[in-house]
Image (tube, rainbow, N blue to C red; front, top):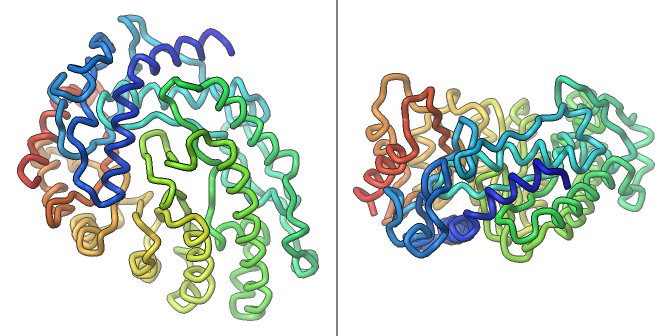
Length: 411
């Protein structure tokens, strides 16, 4: 490991006790239990000056001490360690793709910001191989770019796919490189407090679209039998790849992390992206999305669904899936978020992710409105990811105090 990684892990390690307790607190939220308020607190703000001892680890150390519900707070500015800023180089997507050290160095930048938030965001990293990494199990390879994420531009035609069975899906060089990155990360991060999460999992229909291309939209009408065959192959590919990923995630038998702040219990811990599914009609969602996404959820005990864009039919289907434990939007501005939060509370699901604060709205009012909408029967059905920075004029202590005050009104 290079000196940058050592420096970052030393900073994260000083907060391990709080991070572990924050993970426990999040798991309690997913389990439907009242979170143990001793499980999360601010630890000395951005400087990390407060020791990871009893006072700072959950029994009232700092204004966030004893918070009743987790806030996944991150810092938008550079984190600090003993007064000296921890700056890590950021490598481009092409440079990191086959280089484990550069991959970890780049991923740790976000992890440091999660730790610097000082509350219940749990730092985690992944082999960030792009959304085409599971489609690569079909024998395809992504194009790499310096200025954007990898993208799958290679396709398989219908005849080739019709000849394929589950036995033809293989761990190829690109996916194997991702697994090797995960193995390197597991060794480097041992006992640091920073976790590892799986490579980017797209849902079965998204995966099918990446493998076959836009022709899939015609075959929904012209050859639905073929589309079902392809969807079954995609489920097998997801099972193969995810099983291999989870073998390389330390502690995956108990919990799975996502996106550098979230922790879920193992029995409901996968993330599924359904972006392409937003383009489909109600009937096609019910025929080609719901059954296969439900198969993935059933295999892993549940999870949460992400998608960008808006499709009311997809939203209804997701909220009706018993094993979809939570939901996340890439475009919250396209949704009626108060209604979504109330729906999550009514259906016993969790909304996870960022919800931007309206311009000009006071922080305490913003938090109270969110908690009020997401509250039901003593529980808050929201894991809010929130970022502050010096530019916003919000200190982490002020954010912690406003969040705690909002939660105190409803728990």
